[in-house]
Image (cartoon, rainbow, N blue to C red; front, side, top):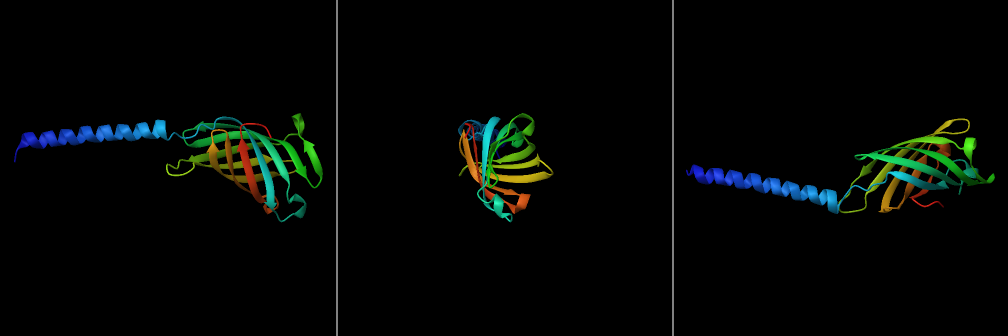
Length: 164
């Protein structure tokens, strides 16, 4: 057995592994980065199904601030608009309800990235929980579905950088 050839093979394998690791890292960071969704967003929920009929077709809008820590998301939201069976109204100042948001980013290399958000809203009268499952369409828009514990609601949701 030739030990000179053995060590040359070991060194070549190590160098090749390091170069390959660097290329995968470069591809992940530069070609397929995790979407940067930190900042201000506007969210619109449209109720499709609900156990409380007056909420059917209700539209709610929120202004959302999100910050990213790796693949973890945190943020807050305030309700700014409602269009329901009781009428249409904007919420300003002290009339806004606040939500705390937590979530994560699922990086998909062969498809669209997915964002999961969970919000707890300190609403008028009681706390409520919403879950959002969003697909990243572009750097400024996501679409998906939501589920809410309020009257067993679910429906469509849009999250975008520009106000509605």
